[in-house]
Length: 275
Image (cartoon, rainbow, N blue to C red; front, top):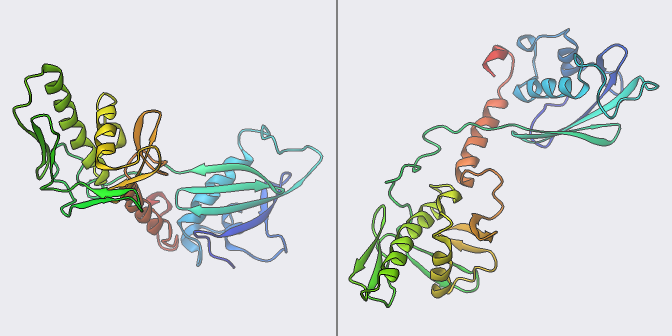
């Protein structure tokens, strides 16, 4: 009897006439009994939260209550092989007779402690400056760094904000650009420190930020790394490379780990409504 968890692949036979599952070899299986209603989760020895999730997903797949509206259904076929692959805690895919039919994504919730640093005045996390490394197209922008812009202004990275210091050259247009760069670099550092969303880097700041990074040596035409966060420029916006979740990847990772630990709990002795 295999345990459902990350990376597990399990197949069952579904009979459309009886609405029941069975194993491919006819052996006894707790999940089959659980799905068919002959075993409760609380009475199980091996079932866990992944199995509860799988039961809900297969029920949706076969659409027991909604009638036969699924594209895989054939009125001349009574038995179907349903295969479930648990990719991770938030993703599972289901195939029917070898054809992938359904991919289920679970929306995660984020606890306040996982989202620590999302407030506007959160201190920056990076305190060790690192000069541009052309081999990795990376650098650190850290607390204490000072950048001389050569136009009468300098940008100083303070504990929780970027401050423009100096008197400029008397150009109103230049003064306005410095303010935009001041606000934009603040958003970029918080983003690179995994504290803020990429959307916090407003579009009106981005051209000046990209020009600023280019002057520091960063090649923004390809993937680059700021404060350990891999970044790319897409449609004129700075984004975290490979991030599919909107929230910073480190925040998502913490929430996913917590959810997977929760799913790994046995159903035995736990009320299903607590899942």
